[in-house]
Length: 142
Image (cartoon, rainbow, N blue to C red; front, side):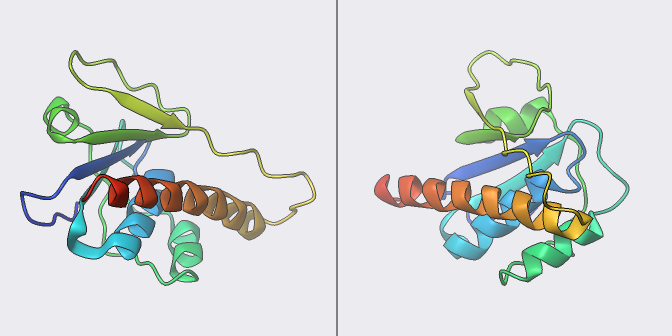
């Protein structure tokens, strides 16, 4: 997890394994906003390592997630975040006082035949959502 200073808002991205979707979102937001926001990510059952293909396609946009380590989601992380965004189908238990939003990335068209094409499609979907989030955060004065 990468953190900025404690006075910045905290965005927590969550997915099942914290090896792909949530790491993509976190890397793209960090790349867009720099130190203006604390960006964290976590998973219900952390993977052993970052998804290499996800890291490759994120790098194509100038963001880096290779140094990140999949992390387990905790109630403490949920409570500490100003915004919790579930990326995908992860079944995150409700926690009193914690508001969560869900990003359900679009299904890749059948015409995308390679794993890389499907990962690029996912990355682009998440990137669009991250740009919208960036606009909202900036309008809130970061």
